[in-house]
Image (cartoon, rainbow, N blue to C red; front, side):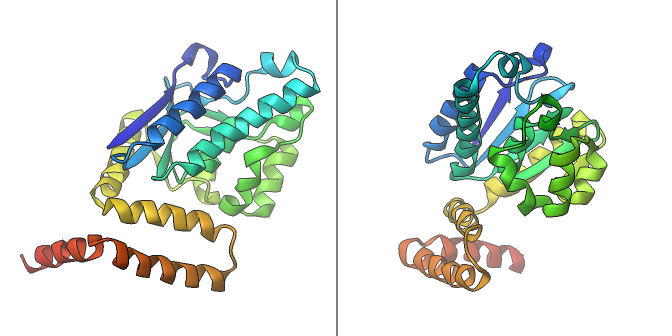
Length: 244
């Protein structure tokens, strides 16, 4: 029920190049088609880096058309995660810069080990931060987003937690896996159709005002009762456990 996707280039700090971006998006889209999927975890191999961002060799060697193509592929990678019908958890170990932080912003939940470091260094290589960097204000607010993209300062896991970029920080990689498995277990044990509906509803909330979002939630709940016995089945199970 759970898919783990790992960028496995630890000697290159799991940097993102054209091939990796394409493979990543294709794999997420393929796994998303499984009706049995309940959750997805995104991570990088090793302890040095989650993903150190875009491969600088790619950035240094491309023209304007190449830059547009590369950024379009970064967006496609992030969009595949946002469109995945189940919750996607970012398991962050080590460096997480640029396009990798945009990928984290596209995930639903964010858990890191204490050695994680986050930053948007694009202005230091002559570029603005673009594509899914636009998601950061929803997570950390405009002021903190501006600080990251204007200064290129890197922040540690403790500050990322304080800013709201993360939901949890663990002391080391072993405890990181334990925390990720704990969260995944709760998702897997929830009613599967309801979790999928909840993710879809949260995505739509992003583009709605408060009043419209509330009414849309009522409509979705009504539709759930009409089309599925899941609410009655799971509520009955909860009641049975409470009576024990």
